Length: 116
Length: 109
Image (tube, rainbow over the protein chains, first blue to last red):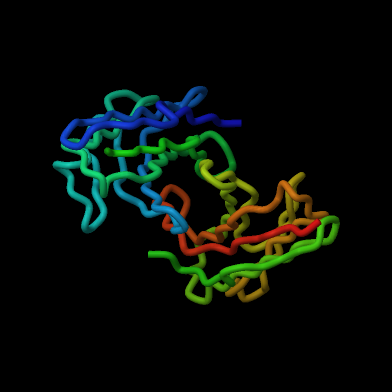
């Protein structure tokens, strides 16, 4: 089945620095990928839809200048958390859909971001 | 926005069938019902999906009512490893997934 690789699995950074998270579709091409954020004991919240070769579409309330998304190829999307603050500490998850397959979206294993 | 309603939590004895309900009364004719689960600190895992007919795979069965306003995910023989949060999602193929609050299933030895 389709595999989505997310890297890193965890990261600790200092306040004010930027962190980049990668999401790769390993054995399929994904024109669209999705980024989610999940706080402890809460559900996944969709942040943005990443479209290959064009600008990402952000959900209401998500700061596009703070969460930079780049989808430069059919197998890679990146999320950069800029000027990170402790309140950005969360579990970030990406997903992508293999349009050739008869099932839904495949999710990455997530990235645990801790800002200190 | 999530278009589904699920009970917040359920318990199930190990080896017994786990029946997880989901209400989606506003579902439209072209929308599918998808089920995913999330084990602690991992990404969601696809379980099964369907449009109108009941579906079965190696993981579970999906029963969709005739009016499509509700469905039930059945794990036929629950194991401890099935302890997770289960999400029922209604979606048009190709659109974004919006997650509801899900059902936290605890399988009890």
